[in-house]
Each structure stands twice: as structure tokens, then as C-alpha cells.
Length: 548
Image (cartoon, rainbow, N blue to C red; front, top):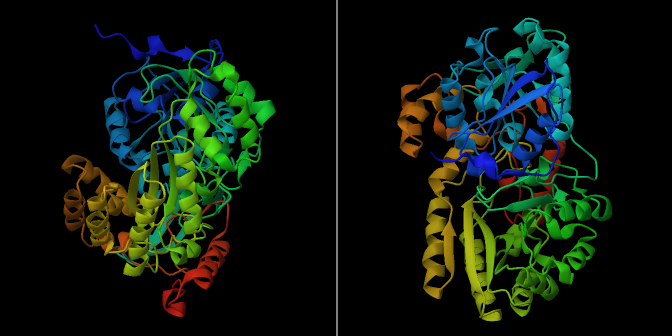
């Protein structure tokens, strides 16, 4: 008999003893235990639920589960990867719960979802969920449980209408979506009851105590890792970046009140520490945190950092990372073109990238990983040639470093200034160009699949009409061919693939998420886009966002 992975867990929080009338909840991650338990967000929400005496929570993964209640009141999913939607549907079927929310009755639990995928644009999956949590769990989980307790035992319709009044709780069934035509753009999105808010606003936690691991286990994808969130969001506001725009404002954890106590707590059970955040080294007290970790009593700790801001790489940072077991560091540069980086608001010059490589080598690191991107708006072959030139310059400036360039295709994301753009049809050829130019020089080339970028863009800009399509794709397999097959079968019932993926949208049209308010209104995003063209576009008015 294979032992349960739960046995190996070391908990870093105190779970409550559920009261006799505790709310029965199943909290699921639509992937394996190893993947799910490595998600800091999933860990945190589970601990929030398990710490309440008025909740009895059981965990569910695709390969293992805790004992499940016979009649849960709530079934929640944390969705952090788009294609995990198929596992959401698989788990619903295993639990004998209809995949479509409209087919559920009072005998079924309320199915809720959260996580970055659903917060960005929940509409392709809206028909699968009774409610969706938009924003930060620190606010939304207590609000959800309290609201459900208030209407527990009432009709499903009454419960949903009550939950829709809670800020950040989005009930898709209470909003009607009409279209210009069955295969045309959205006409309007309106609530179907007068007391339902016309817009649902994402909820933002503004405290200075951020997330830290609530469980450490050797069964995690990152074995025995203890994770600490150092910063949330990013101050740079690169115009394409969902991680920056969707999570505004930039927040930092207090070093003395939050980070150091959390780190000391975690290092009592493991010697692996991960510092998380989109821009960890831009914490205003990062040098103090680094000095704290550089103490002799932490010499045995293995330390890993998320991607760091390029111009914060120093020889001292590299030295400390090497001392704690790191071999490489990761920076995001997007392009070798100063013009293109200026356009996307990267605020980074090629000489700073070169300096980062030199400092990484001086500090003893053996590898430098760079994130790049092709297909950004207004990109030309000249920009790609500058990326090649930059990589060759880095190789010459830091010859002892093993250089890796991971490169993705630009995918438009909701709530960003580039949400109106489509995927560049030439992106695949541009990835091939970079591969041909870089690999002969010994540079490790790791491109992301162009076909996956197409699917990602489809889901990123999709609307509710995709729900039936996605159910078909689940049975056909998740290849680009299966998506094209499903589009062909549903022709006339929704726009073609090209509309969602490649078309450039007008800033005046109703977007699938127009009724969901992110940190910045659409008008501000348009201004940020216009500022981009003014800063970096040589083509002038020809490349401006379409307004009509």
C-alpha cells in the first residue's frame, strides 16, 4: 500500500477543531498533490479555512484526497494554469456534480474558484462556477465564509444573490451577456437583477504581512521548500505584464515584523528557503534581508530567488546566492532592443544587462538565465537582430557564464495596456530566427511553444462562448488541432479563433471582462498605451491603439 503524502507534511500553522455544525468544505487543486502543495496560494487558502472552527475542510487533488464530506456546502478550486480547467471538469464529474453551473440543484455544493487565471479573465470558465473570487485571499476567504454562513440553508438562488452583494464575489449567472451577432463581438454585459452591482471590483489586500508557507513536505515539486512572499506586484509596470498590473499596488512585507519571523519559523523544519515575488530585489530593505541571511548560522540554508530586477544584480548578491547553493540567477530583459524596451516601459538599457552578467560572474555564479519575448507590438527584424547582438555581447563580457535565453511569444492579457493587441502571426518564424542565430554560439535556447501561446491568448481574451468549446477540446486533447476542430464544429455559434487570438481590438468595444474592475480603469490603460507609443514607436500614428 502506497503511504499517503499527507503523512510527510510538517504544518506551520495550528488547525482548529471543527465545531459540530461546521461548514463542510472541499478545497481542490486541479492537478497532482506534488504540484498543488507547491502552490503558495493554495497552501495559504487551505490554512485560512482549516484555522476556522466554523469550517471543516478537506483537500482534493487529481491523485489523492483527504476523506471528503458526503454533502459539502462549498467546493473550491484554485486555478493557476489555464489548461488545468480540464481537471476541474474531471473532478466535478468524479464527484457527480454537473460541469455547467446552470444544471446544478440544491443538492449540489456551491462551486467557487479563485487564483490568478480566474482573477485575470474568468469568462471562458464562467459557466463552470457558481461564484468566482476576484482578488486577494486575505480579504475574500473570510468574506466568503461569513457570507455563506449567513444564508446557509436557504435556496440556491437566494444564496447566490446574497453572495453577489459581497465585494469581490462574482456570480456569473447573475449577468447577461449579449452579442452583436452569434459570431460577433460582445454588445453589452448587464446584471439581471436591479440589486446586483453593474461592476465587480477586484479586492486588494494592503497589509505588510504577506504569505508564507503553511506546510513543508518532501512530496512537493520543490522538495521541502519553505516559501516566503517578499513583495507583491511590481513597480515597473511593463505594459504587457499581467503580474504587475493585475496585482497593483506594489506592496512589500515588513522585514522585521513579517519576513524575519516567518523565515525563522520555516527554518526550524527545513533548510530550503525560497524568496518569492515578481521583483524581490526591489524591496526597499532587500540589502538588510540579504545581510540577515548571510549570517554564519544560516550557512547550511539553500536559498533560491524568483526573477530579479536586472539593475539590482551585484557581485555581493551573487556571492550570497552561491554560498547558499545557487548556481544561476534569472533576469527578465524581454528584448535586446533599447527602443522596444522603452516602448514597453522596461526602463532598462543594454549596458545594465551587460553589467548584471559581469557582476553575476564576479560573484561566482556559473549561469545566467534571461527571459525574452518575441511578437511585442511594433517589433521589427532589427529589434530581433539587436537581441542576438546583446546575447553575443554578454557571452563576450562574461565568458565563464552559461547563458540561457528562454523566449516566449507576446500574449495579450486582460487589465493591461496591451490587452487590445493580438498575437503576431510572424512570432513563430521569429523564434526560429533567434534559434538559428544563437545556438551555433553555444547559447542555451529555450523557446516556449508558439502553439501554446495561441491557446493561451484564446483563453486570455475569451468570453463565455468558449465554455462549450473547451468541453469539446477536453475530449479531443489539448493540441492546437483539437481547438481548430472544435471551432469548425461550432462555426456560426462563436467568433473564429483568429478573432480571439490575432485580431487587434478597438478600445471602444465591450471586452469580456468590462464588468470586472481591475486595479486601473480602461481609460488609464489606454493612456499608458499611448505613452508607450510616444516613448518608443518610430512608426507614429500607424501603430496606435485602434479607437474606432
